[in-house]
Length: 186
Image (cartoon, rainbow, N blue to C red; front, side, top):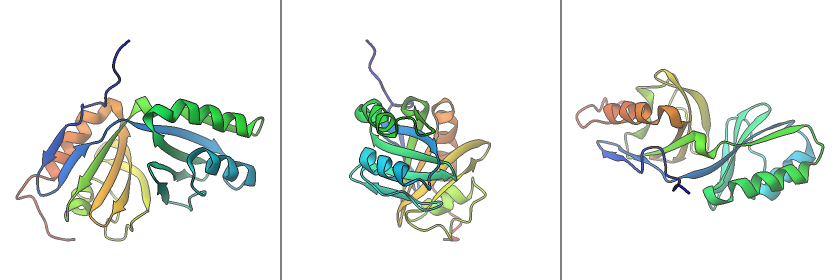
């Protein structure tokens, strides 16, 4: 049996912003009618948080739910509990029209920390980073690849991308965070 490892095995870069690939993260893609009480209860039972509002993420003790679209959430939990959480969610929803897919192994997660974190992402994404508040999530592109990111603190951004483009994303972030590249607009 092989050991499961993150896409880039925890690579990091210390520029004017620190870029760090995070450990494995359990992630479920959930689709359904997010306005249904039954679905809200099932999500809360699965990850321990209330249904997030549009374009927000709710986290508590390593578990959470992020609004991805009007009928989609990204649910997060420890990597080792992703499959059990998916099974629990499917069982609680029964025949309720929904989809639960474990996407943990298809994603890479990066943390950007430092006063210039907003600026680094602003160089690569068409999002108004000055307006983004802690707890808000955006699903957009980073240069030429899809990504989702949120303000996980005043000077911290968590970014999720497809594992298949993890090296490309890391290289983009590293280049944007190089010392001397500060624009100073944030």
